[in-house]
Image (cartoon, rainbow, N blue to C red; front, side, top):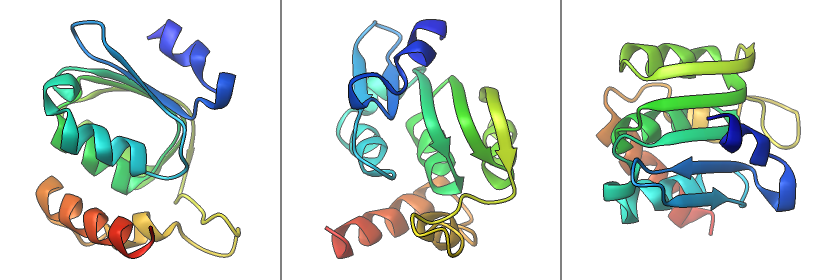
Length: 137
């Protein structure tokens, strides 16, 4: 995990995932798009993976649960995300917790965190995030 954490912020790395087999996926885009793509397109790599990310909100936490990751580090993580990951039994460490992830404009709660706040399952959150990404791409 230390190697993954050390990659954050270098060469545009916003997050990084390493599969149990050693394959590494680097996240460079803002938000949850890269994580969504990994969970959707490479479920074989996410199962049991280790993830380090700069910011993890509730939407990302749901995706991490859906992907079956084993271990997560976040520089900043929302309290709802902490609860979701802990409830799923995922090993978690972080630098700082915040009440909610704030949107890019700094004017309110992150839209994906807000969108997934009433989701009852990782599958439901995945569907909501899929539609959000489709609408905003």
